[in-house]
Image 1 (cartoon, helix red, strand yellow):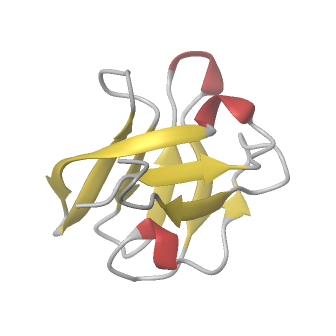
Image 2 (cartoon, helix red, strand yellow):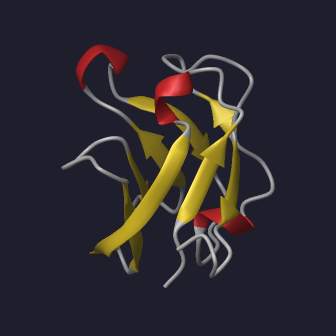
Amino acid sequence: MADMIVSGAGSSAVNGTYVENGTLNGKPLYIMQGQVDYPRIYFDSAGSWYIYAYNSYKGLLYYSNESVDTPDLCTTWNASIFGTAPAPTVTAASSSQN
């Protein structure tokens, strides 16, 4: 189980470390470290990865249409209508960062 690090997002509230918190639609679900529910990274039943925030961020901020096992394997992230460019980079934390 690897944490995910989101960095470089124009919507800076999603930048940070996400910890695995169960599964959703057969893939890992990640919640931002220190938060209860949001921001989160999850796999949608339609086959896309999403970075989703709530409260003042209105919901879906970034997405990748790549159906891969974990979000760090996505090669392209896009800003949604509520997200601000640039899109983030998602990487797996090294074991020393977990």
